[in-house]
Amino acid sequence: MSGTTTTQRMPSYLEYKGRFKGLAGWLLSTDHKRIALLYLYSQITFFLAGVVMGIFMKIELMAPGQQIMGPATYNALFTVHGLTMIFLFIIPGLAASFGNFFLPIMIGAKDVAFPKLNLFSWYLFMGGAIIVLIGIFTGDGPPDTGWTFYAPYSLKTNTNVVLTVFGAFVLGFSSVLTGLNFIVTIHQMRAPGMGFFRMPLFIWAMYGTSWIQLLATPVVGITFIMVIFDRVMGIGFFDPAKGGDPILFQHLFWIYSHPAVYIMILPAMGAITEIITTFSNRVVFGYKAIAMSSLAIAFVGYLVWGHHMFTSGMSDTARLVFSLLTFLVAIPSAIKVFNWSATMYKGSIDLQPPFWWAMAFLFVFMIGGLTGLVLGSVATDVHVHDTMFVVAHFHYIVFGGAGLAFFAALHYWFPKMWGKMYNKKVANIGLLILFIGFNTLYFPMFILGIMGMPRRYYDYLPEFATPNLISTVGSWILALGLIIVIVNLLRAKKAPPEIIDNPWNGRTLEWKIQSPPTLENFEEIPVIDHGPYDLIKE
Amino acid sequence: MEEHKTHISSYGNHLFVLLCLITLTTITVAITSVQLGAFNTTAAMIIASTKAAIVLLYFMHLKFDEKIFRFMVTLVLAIYVVVIVITFFDYLYR
Image 1 (cartoon, rainbow over the protein chains, first blue to last red):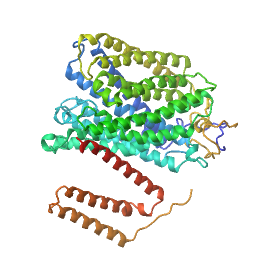
Image 2 (cartoon, rainbow over the protein chains, first blue to last red):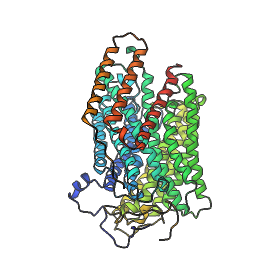
Image 3 (cartoon, rainbow over the protein chains, first blue to last red):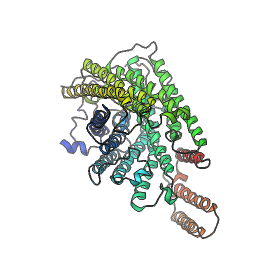
Image 4 (cartoon, chains in turn yellow, orange):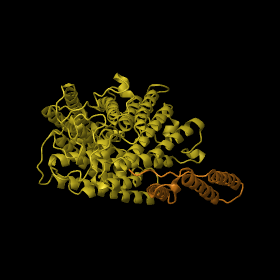
């Protein structure tokens, strides 16, 4: 490979003086790395807001009876918690932040295909977020429908559904445009010699994700507009009294929102693949199988939405079909897990913080995945539907899967993004506390669900008290771990820069350039003549 | 990277497409006065699909572009059809 020398250090993207200075230099920059950081900071802010709401909910559920809030406030809080975490943190997830930062670098490009569109996507994201926030704090109060906005209740509640739904609609545009941008970038801007099967597996995951963003998001966009039309004009798409069908809402909503789970988890799996390969010091096992499984997850994941609706009143035939399809999606997911294990087998494993994060991901993701089979089977799902079991499964997948992978990626790529290294010991301690807190918080919910405690109630029967108390204590442990992790990273970010271009002995292209990267990433576009994980002597 | 080939459609071509779209729109409106029962919806869907295909092929240049784009659009439509078919496992058997 040529053109990747790091001997002469150039001003990094953080130091580069462009047309605009100061804050404007960030808000008007079309550099994919700066846009990535804009996403990262916004997402982490929203995430922390969601965490605070979650902690308040757990305090309310600490003991039977009313603790700190009444039912209406609790309903609003779980709705806003869901909206913030889903639409503002984890759907943009790793794709918007790490995807934006590393996708062009890992394919040997100077930027994404449409840099201005990329910046516009961030503005749409923030615009949508602001509309959602206005919706929460104005009118007749925050929506109390849950983040799913199920009809017919979302048509009847007096809370501020219209504005919030419109905000989510705008957020969808941001997602679609980012997906489009990444697809074109991957097709058009790969470095010479980089065929599709020489792309790092994170890029394959991003490719699958981008297609889902492009194809599934418009469905929920139009569904939200139909809700607004129903509320404002009384058309009755979802109102049985007017010939509409509330189950149609669920179909349309989940046609997007189930693939959205893969928008969250696919980039996470991509990042985990990179981390496991790097810290195992091996060529990834089953490259093509992992690459194809990303596309298979994207495709099959598109067809399984009905497993959210087993008790909605849809036909038995549909329930059987969706149950079968749901079990099929476990296959490509398992392919990834087996290949990760095989990559680690007989590897020379380097136990660094990102690797521990990846292991934490694997552990909780397996629990999340296996409990998903309980929900994918109609016979068992009907017993635990709308119970705390679903809440536990969901958080094991979305927070334990995508969330932990988000932090794994942050620890992995932190030295590349800022040219600094965090305190590894503190990072490990933070993770350990967070991991204990996570399982203490969510595991009791599986038991509560099987015991029959329904979700989305501010109060419960006395027999559910002990697991709920344990779960609340878990939320405090988790918060403590999170504070340690974030403070550690913030302290590292303020430390003086070091020369750490490749601290992990990574083999993909981002580790061949200086840290932090220069404005155009590569002084000379590299020519690729080997696989992404091949060990090449420089 | 190889130079992008561009195709410039003639005015006559555009005009013909415009006339086709206007004619099909007229038929869409006219057909509502004919009692075809359930086939009214089918007819409307066929006409709408034809119009969409004309727009995609001529106005959006799919007909003159590289095969990969036609493949991508076909794939998207195939997924759309699959989604509709699966949804009807509910509506037809409910």
